[in-house]
Length: 288
Image (cartoon, rainbow, N blue to C red; front, side):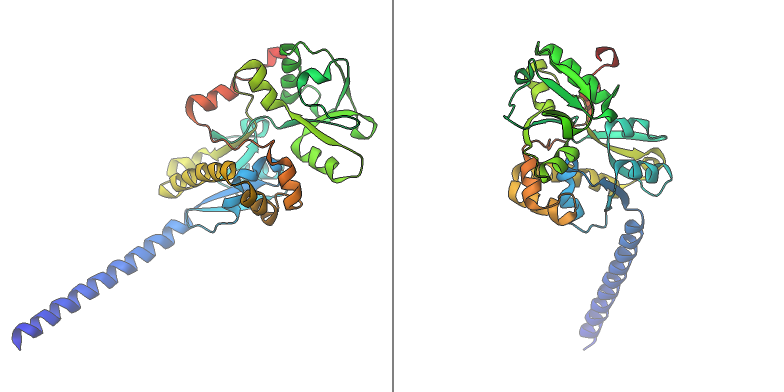
């Protein structure tokens, strides 16, 4: 009986130690959850690649949908977010932050009515209208550089889409116009035309920007988030039907049909290092 009693004691001791280990693990996970990266995602078609993250609860990150990219930049600056997906101009202007990755290129689309335009050369001799907000912008510089590279002269004017037959705008504006009953059709993406004509990376569009003070103390949660984001972009590129469904469910799109209409013009990329730097060099101010 004595050997058996000693064995039982050892078993109880092992079980007690395992229980303490489990308790320590739960406490550690609780602390780890408290340090999870807080990420803002703009309500934009350019962010379709992050749709899976918005639909997947995680202890490593907390993704929230923001109304506008500007509101997310403000929250990032105020310390209410640790990271955000922002258009390049806002990402580059965010104080005490660092751009860690590029998730897409400058998201300009050419749309038209009365005949679909498929390539840059189809703009020859046409009048192309741009929103006033694009005047003197980096996006406008991209357009002018591309027109010169394709040897395609056309008249550039600024105004509203209502009086235009050919319009150049961001994906979200295009989406709103397509939702109306004005006969608009998507022509082509300037980023894709850029890759074909210039054979260089198009200028960066959507970027992952992170607060420097968060990076200084970030641990495995942030590293896990970066891996999850890269995987989400790959998933978006491979799983069209599921991605458009998640984009609609997450609030990134008006409907699955709307998300599907823009899917072909999205860039599901995750660029770091030299590839990311190449997108920053894709457009120089002197080219505008």
